[in-house]
Image (cartoon, rainbow, N blue to C red; front, side, top):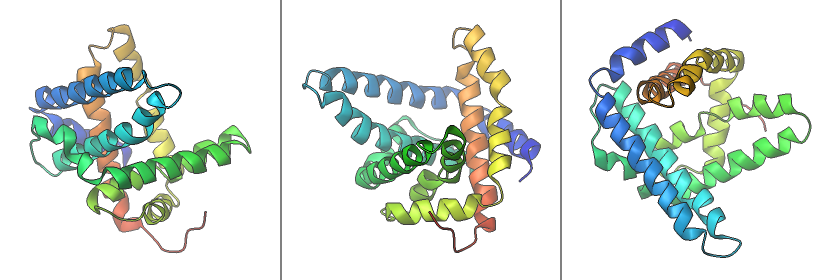
Length: 202
């Protein structure tokens, strides 16, 4: 996995698509906010419902969008909802990843970080395999990231400067930075697929 190549490819893949990618991000963000506000009126569980059901489906949508983008396709606004055709699977993957990461984090921060990287490809696997059992997605993610966790960690750190740029520009730079980061992550997933091996354990 060559970090420079992944990022260079992402820049070319999002070229000419920033407008529609920003629109999709805007739709997802706005509807997530509205849903959270509406459901917050339900005592105790409203916000939780939004977090565990709506958010995972939108996250799956975003992953599918960027897998399509790096494959050379141009998304449309309706793709913001494409994850809802498998929202139950998205929920299960999100819930189990969150649960496993939390449990590992109880040991110490570092094990939690390591495991979060280990599980990071689970949603990408689901995106390409509708209805795939959550535990299988997580297992395959562990296999895929075996021996590449440090590469993925450094890849994430390499965007710190871009994140800071977004902050100092009051979010304006994120219009380009977010697609750049998402496309790079999709490229990382594609680069790791051939490297997957069997036999990983929780």
